[in-house]
Length: 474
Ligand code: FAD
Ligand code: NAP
Figure: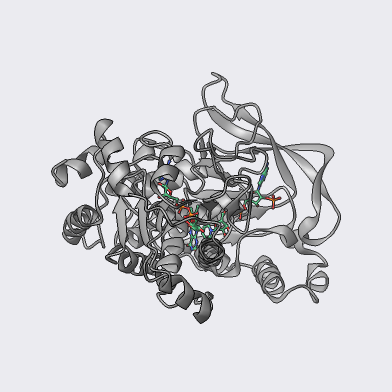
C-alpha cells in the first residue's frame, strides 16, 4: 500500500522539507489508523519523525485481534505497516498504555503533535435484563477469544447448547456465525488459537440465528461475507421467503451494492434445499428480521440464558434511515448461547482529552481535536466504530494531511526542538515500564511462526503478555 494516498501537493512537500525543521510526532495506537497516519506523515515530510505507542506488546490492533482467522489475505496490510515501522524515522514502543503509563499531557510536552488512534476497545451494551447471565457474551469478547487477545484468553464460552443467537446484522455478526459453524478442519490451518480450536472442536452448536431489529434492506453486512456464509461447507441457510416479499421491486433503483445483496438474499430464500443437501448439511443458520431484544430469559435456576424475548418491530421510514418501532407484540426465541454483536465502542483515554460520550468519539474537525491545538485523532476513535481497513486508511490520511497543513501554516510551532522518546523514555523508566521495540516484536513474531509451523498454521499466537515479555528478555 506504500505510495497510496499521495495527496500532499508537491509544493507542500517541498516547502515542508525545505524548512530544515524536524517535527516530532507521536501516534497512540498501532492499528491501521496509527500506521496509516504515520505512513502518510513520513511520506510527505522528509524530516518528520514518528513514534508509535501501543498498549499491548504486539502491534496491528484489530488486524491481529479482530480480522477473522480464515481471512488471511486481509492481514497482508501488515507487510505495509512493517515497512513503515522499519523506517529509520519511525519507532514503535509497545507495552506502553497511554493514559496509565504516560499521560497525554506528558506526550504533548515531548512532541510537536500527538495523534490519538487508539480505536474502540469496548462494545455497546444492550441495556436489557438478563444481559449478564452466563451464556451471554459480547461478540467483541468472543472475537478476542478466538483471536488470542490477552484480555479474552480465559473467556471459555459455553458451547454445550445446540442453538446460538447472534444479535446484530453486521459483518462482525457474520464472522462470529461463520467461526461457530465452520468445519474445524477449515480452521485448523489458520492462525486461530489452539485452545479456541479445541473448544470449537467439541462445540455442540449446530444452529445459529442472526437477529436484526430492522429489515432485509437495512442489514449492515456486505455481499462477500454473506456469500461466504451461504457457501459454508456442511451448513445450510434458512431464509423465510415471506421476509422478502416485494423487495425485488423495492431495490430496483437502490445503489448497486444494496441491490445485489438483497437479490442474493431473495435468491437464497427461494432455493428449496433437496433432501441430499439437508443430509449433507448437519448445521444451519438463518436470518431473522424486525426483532429487537427485550430480555434475556433465564433457566429455572436463574443461572443461565435459555432464550431471548424479542419485541417485534415495524419500520418507520424508508431505506437506511428507517427506524424500528415496537409493534407491541413479543416473541420468545430459545437458545443457550447469546452473542451480542451490536457494535464496538471507544472509551475516553485521559481527562485532558475531550470526549463525546454519546457518540463515543473524540470531537474533531478533519482530525483536529476540538479546542486542543497540536492534538489530533484518526480511525475508529475519530469516526466511530464502523468502516473497513480502507475506510480507516483514507480517514487516517486525512488526519495526517491536517498535521502537514498545520506544520505549513505555523499552527504547530516547531522552532523549539522536542525530545520525543528521550523525554518519554525517562518518564517510563521512572515508572518501571519497559517498552517493547519493533525488533522485539519481530522476535515474538518469529517465535509464533515457528510454533505454528509444526501444526501447519501460519502462526500459533502467544496469548500471555508475560510470556511475550519473557521471550524478549524483559
Ligand atoms: P484498532 O485496529 O482497534 O487499533 C487501535 C490500537 O490502539 C490497538 O492496537 C490498541 O491496543 C491500541 N490502544 C488502545 N488503547 C491504547 C492506549 N491507551 N495506549 C496505547 N495504545 C492503545 N476490516 C476489513 O477491511 N476487513 C476485515 O476482514 C475486517 N474484519 C474485522 C473484524 C472485526 C471483528 C472487527 C471489529 C473489525 C474488522 N474490520 C475489518 C475493520 C477494521 O479492523 C477497522 O477498520 C480498523 O481496525 C480500525 O482501526 P483503528 O486503528 O482505528 O483501531
Ligand atoms: P455494524 O456494521 O455497525 O453492525 C452493527 C449491527 O448491530 C447493526 O445490524 C445494527 O442494527 C445492530 N444494532 C446496533 N445497536 C443495536 C441494538 N441496540 N439492538 C439491536 N441491534 C443493534 O458493526 P460491526 O458488525 O461491529 O462491524 C464494525 C465494522 O467493521 C463495520 O464497518 C464492518 O463492515 C467492519 N467489519 C468488516 C469485516 C469484513 O470486511 N469482512 C468483518 C468484520 C467487521 P441497526 O442497523 O438497526 O442499527
